Image (tube, rainbow, N blue to C red; front, side):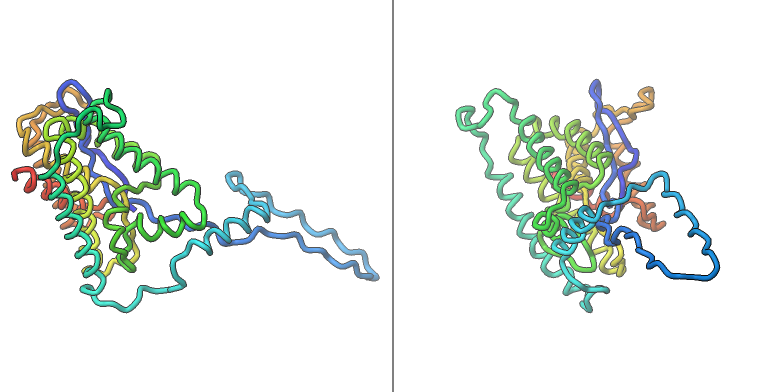
Length: 320
């Protein structure tokens, strides 16, 4: 529903991107229409000769007709993967829609912070890849999960289609608790995935080296569910049931907030304007103002609520 936009920044000599993104494009339903089949005309006898039927209209240049087997397969996949036959959001109060996601978020936040505070660095002999830097391995693991979910979206099977639509996208009309976490690891376009993962690698590896793998994971996961819940609550209260949300930018905004709190004077460069240098606290302050303006003006391209809540969570937790 929402796509990533600029706000791209670099940190010192390496490319650092601050990308504000979260709400992303609506789910594309698999085609339900069956391909047109040819009709047999029964021969009839007429006294006067009949004119031949007009030729069929030419196919659209960009259209690729599906064979009956392909259409039938996609219909079966869609039917097996749909979660309900509801034509409209079920009658529920805002509190009923938000109760379970809120409890799930509190549970995940508590567990994440406990893990962050009690984490001890493993001995190299206890790691799968002892020669790989721990910060790189941690961030690469997160990127790998996002990539796996992206591939699953592109190869829809009945069982994965149901799981993805239930737990890897946040739907205000029919929210599922686990989608608060799963939607933060979910992308449907390569551009969205690529920009988010580039930002995560650029800032995430630096922050992970600075605070440790355990605290980094705790902050990332807690920021994911907090930003997802904030976005869900905003849409539910405003009864915006025709939107869906997925993407890692809420969690990445938390990483940006923590990084800025710990490194307020770090020099950041805009990717395509390297001659413009901003301190981290100034750059993030501008981003926060832009997100706030987007909320006030009702800009519907990005999930400004998720971005701003992620930044705020990272700033607050980063000081503890």
